[in-house]
Image 1 (cartoon, helix red, strand yellow):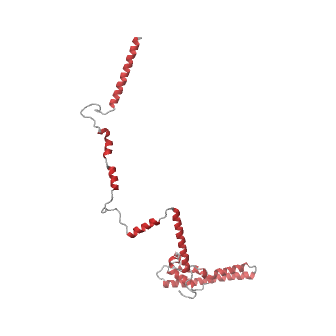
Image 2 (cartoon, rainbow, N blue to C red):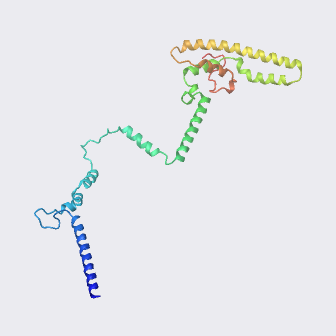
Image 3 (cartoon, helix red, strand yellow):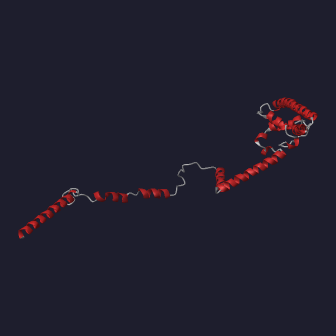
Length: 245
């Protein structure tokens, strides 16, 4: 029994000694050469802590922040031209009058639209050229309106005659219905003939008075005005009947 116990203890000691030697070799191989020895070429400490020391010594970040916070010299260039006084005042007015939110902007647009419509209605009644719609502005359109308003046109009686003819056609009397039909045809022919003559005269006057002005659509504008009764015309007539423009 004594021999077996001694043999087992020897084997255990050998195993522990071999494991320790392997562990020692592995740890020693993981370090660079000369770390643990006192040779002639020792490894400097900066090799291990070099990155941290460089980051601490580099002042680039602080310099950039300090440069950005430094005030600009008066003689140094700004990089952009100095705006004029009027432009600066305009920008300040826009900034002060800019709406705070979308509801305020919509409200202001609605109020501006209402104000424009009110000015247009007043201009249509008074004939003020500044606030008239685009289709009624200009000396050519004004002359066409005055040319039409100064004459009797059959087309302006079209609506009342149409009502009379409609009433006569609804009566169940054969003779009245025939009269209404003939009257309707006669009114249509008279309006066409009168409109053709008015268009020729209007075009001639426009060519004489406004040779260099654009006259596109002016004749059609005048013929459409003849279909309206004088009291319902907009803009309001500015000349009397028989008064030549």
